[in-house]
Image (tube, rainbow, N blue to C red):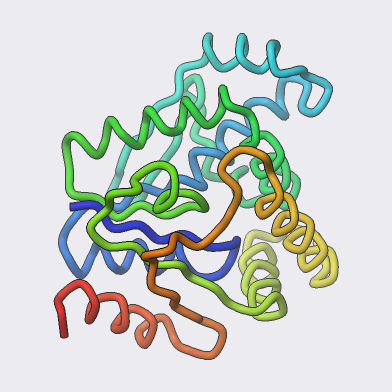
Length: 218
């Protein structure tokens, strides 16, 4: 069984994906974390100065591994735990930027399909229900208004002692939303058969109950 949750950054889809997997006792695969880990690698080796061919060469020689430890997903790049880097605003922006490249998407897609052959999965991202798993049994599209999303990201970053302002975080999200919705390859969009879940005013528990109710046919 494959359950997909798509939507913009900070809409709550990652938390809901984790909780859905916990409720159903199946595995959760965080796609965004994989893209951000790859963006971290590219950023450490030239960033936006690299062309697609150079990025392809860099990635082909890199060891990208996903592991689960005590319920937490960790993406290792050449043995480096990228957990402390994947939430930085610059890395989030670069992840959206580089995710437009076919070579990057192919690598992430292969990782996703590899896990899908072994496990029942909850997978979240931006094109999971439209491009990666179009035949998934259950699809959800998670949204929230920009101010709510910016506040969530800001509070998360402040807890990690990152020196950013709420306006900077909001601007970063707005730029990322535009990039995601207008990229040529696999833009962010709701699948025709996906169920819309708006988390702006609902608690996580309320949103989770809506998802579980659909899956269990309540």
